[in-house]
Image (cartoon, rainbow, N blue to C red; front, side, top):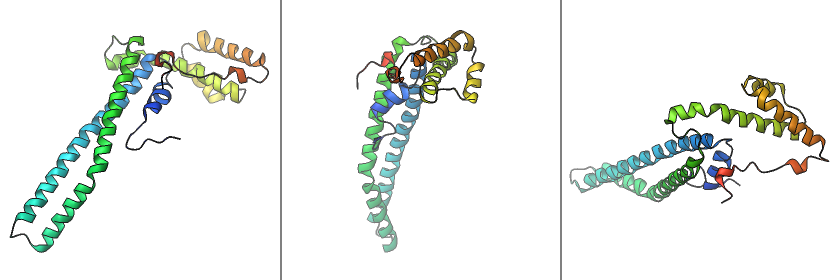
Length: 204
């Protein structure tokens, strides 16, 4: 179930499937930062939309109050007012939901901040600095998922792993560790564990 009326993402989805899918605190912070920018833009656009709607209603009311306005134009003005006011309840819910989503994103970012390795750097520099560690975590996770489900690593993914500078020092040892663990297991089920990031805690 992925119900998220009036929102882009639910709090649960933001925490466990967006931030929680990252492998470093910096990676989680960066992806939330990106989400936050998008939602902040939507909030401002929503405010502008609300102002335009009010202007549309005022414009229509002026036409209705003008005795020189034709009957047809008055009908159109009245229809414009009905349309504008009918959209208000949905607009209010969407706007409120966007503000709540943005507030939760900022809350998560604040929780993650103390665990960041590159938090002292500006945003753009920090984003570049965390790439190596974030990709290393991604590659290790792919190793686990592929070996646990298919028993092998597809050649294109292995090729990508070999391009990582830490392939020999970190990824190959991880492949050996996972392979040995699977071999020593009856069915590998006990190796299936949550990927819950420690810095996000276990709060819902």
